[in-house]
Amino acid sequence: MSLKIGVPSKGRLMEKTFDWFGARGVTMSRNGAEREYSGAVEGIADVELVLLSAGEIPRELAAGRIHLGVTGSDLVRDKLADWNQQVAELAALGFGHADLIIAVPACWIDVETLDDLDAVASAFRARHGFRLRIATKYHRLVRDFLTETGVADYQLVDSQGATEGTVKNLTAEAVADITSTGETLRANHLKILGDAVIHRSQATLFLARAADWGAAETAAMAALAAKLQIATP
Image 1 (cartoon, rainbow, N blue to C red):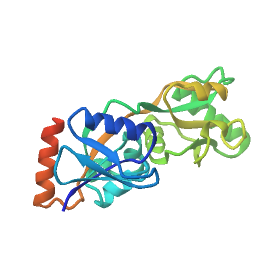
Image 2: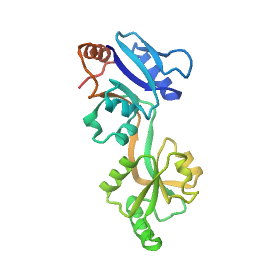
Image 3: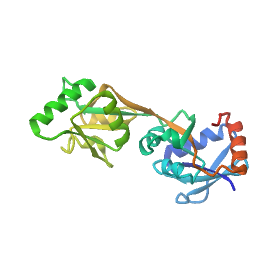
Image 4: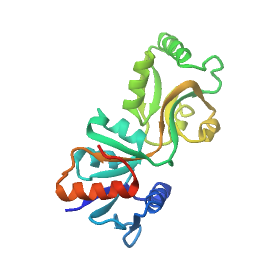
C-alpha cells in the first residue's frame, strides 16, 4: 500500500503545490497528458499522487480515500461539518490567499457594518415581505458566521456561477464570496462590509483521520513529515 496525496489538478494551485513540495525535496509531476489524473512523486518512497479538483479534495479526505490533501482552507470548513474531527490541518502553504467576505451595493451609503446590514435586513423584510437575499457558494460558513454575529432576517440563495453579478441581475441584494483583490466586486459596484471577513483562506495541507493508516502508510507519513519538517497528529 502507499500513502495517497490529493493535489489540485490544474492551474496555479497545482503549480504552486508542486513548487512547495519541490522546495522541500519532494518532486511531483503529472503523468502524460493534461487530462490524466495521476502523477509521480520522487524523493520519497511509497507516496502516490492523485490529481483532483480542489472542490473534490475535502470529500475525498472525509471519505478516507486519500491520506493527505492540498486544498483551500475555506473549502474544507464549508464542505465538512465538524471539519476538525474529520481532518487535521498539517501546514498552511502560504499561497492561494483569498478572503470570504460579505459585500453589499456601493450605493448603500449607510451600510458599512454587520449591524447596519442587520438593520437593513429587518427593514427590507418589513417593506418587501420576504427576507433579504445573500448569494453565496459557502452556505455553512456564511450561515454560522451570521448566526454568531446576530444578523437575522436574511436568506441564502445558491450561486455556483458569477456570484458578484447576482445583485445586478436582481437575484440577490448582497453577496458572500471569496476575493483576493476586491477588483471584481468593485467592477460590479459592490463594497465589502468593514467587519465581515468570514474566513481568511489559503492553500493548506490536510490529513484524513478516516484513511487507512496501516504500518506502511504510517511509515511513509513519518518519512514525508520529516522531509517537509511538519508535525503530525
